[in-house]
Length: 474
Image 1 (tube, rainbow, N blue to C red):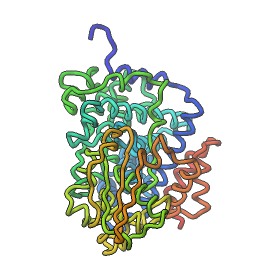
Image 2: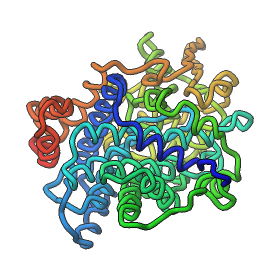
Image 3: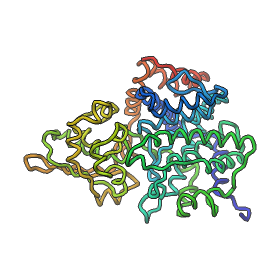
Image 4: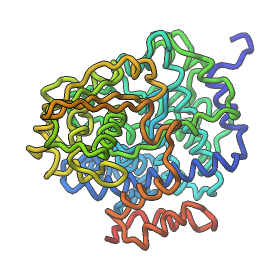
């Protein structure tokens, strides 16, 4: 290494030396916690069947036992921190309502926040340390994802190869978050990442053809990150060249194609955390510009009964997720599968509606196999749009053309979806989303209390917050 710092050592130095966050970063991090808790509470409320992933994981982890240090959100169960992080990370991602960073195309907060909350309870961390650990963990997760974006490919190499960057990069980010809260020194933080790189996993075929395993990916990342940090704290070490080495992370996952500048330049100065987009709709993020187009055309007076055909133009790489296989996208096999369908989500936007445009109720049992919605979905074809292709993955764009039964054609183009850095949700909209989600599990009074406690104005606010989100009050 010739005395030069390796990539993981530079990241560890950033994590160790960043002691004070700017007011902008503090505000953003609090909103990340708010969004994740809302998603978790709604996820728990929606999860009524024993086969649901969070319920299944909870049964498994209860059998494992251990010292009950940390809260399982939406449950009176307490588990060891790594196991609580597993369930809570699963809940954070289970509805596909979690935030997305571009151009890395990963969901950082659903792994990082659950890991932080679980370890923070275990060690009775101060709120300032919780916020610092979350902000730094998300930043490192985002930058690992950014390093995989190669302009000449026009996409993340993770995504091209079928890897789930969310859980693979999220495991490393979560290890940093946990290591900070465990009080690890700079070397131990480096080792935590080196260990975590052997633990991250995830493939995304479930986005195309179904399966519930993807819904536990963020839980596994949070769990693995906590385990990796615990190991580093106890003296287990990782390779210093774990990222750039011959048999390291970038060679193993990306065939050695990565952008070092995206990973390391401007650390602590230019925060990628701030470019992480919130989701207004509980669906795969690739579907969002199509939903935006449909909502806009519906607002102009076009109704589902008027429509003969819809052409949804999107970037080529996203068609594999939201347009193929066509038969499964126009006839989704479950409510979750419907969230990854361009045809279904467009039809739902023309027929259903709620929340900030479409909402969880558009995917309940009475909707996702509703003949009216499915009939309109069959009229939607998903094609490549050149302009959306050029913009991707820096934003999710779409162009919609609607042919009505009277022979008229209408169109609408979106160059960046709602919630993106180009069209960010307001704080009021974030609160609306949180309130809608949390109120599925908590009373209106408790929903208000949670949003207040996240401000961490008093030393007891964190412990009070975790007590509140563990008890169903509706």
